[in-house]
Amino acid sequence: TTKMIYILNNVWHKQNLSACVSSYVMLLGSHVRKHCTEDSGTSCAPCPASTFTVEQNGLTECMKCTVCDPGQGLRVKTPCTQSSDTVCEPLDGHYCTDEQNNCCVQAVEHKKCRPGQYIKHKGTSSKDTECDECEDGTYSDGSFQTCKPHSK
Image (tube, helix red, strand yellow):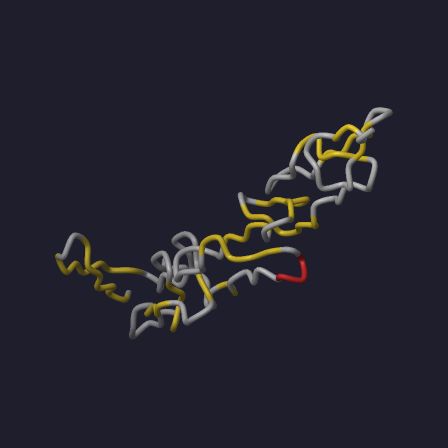
């Protein structure tokens, strides 16, 4: 029988155990540095830079932070901390095409309207631009939000 010493509510406790508790739960933002043995308890360490854990765990390594790749149309909305992953959002002029766990993982550039079309609905971070055709006798270079009449 081994004795486990732990702190609960700032009070030291001893507990007799028949075996070491190797799946000791680490705190948010930390990982198992060394599993317990018959002679020592489990020790934990904070997650190093660019890594995190989001819940209490028994992990021996923290997870790598997500990288918001501008090549995928992304930028950082919320940076990674020891206890939360990076949250990405679309770059200006882009909209999200794939979102997972409230984080954009893929974004593409808004559609450009062609000459003869106007911008019916401007693109947002979650929707593409909508274009529509100008009526006869009107024009747009593709950047107008309404078609303009031809001058006579």
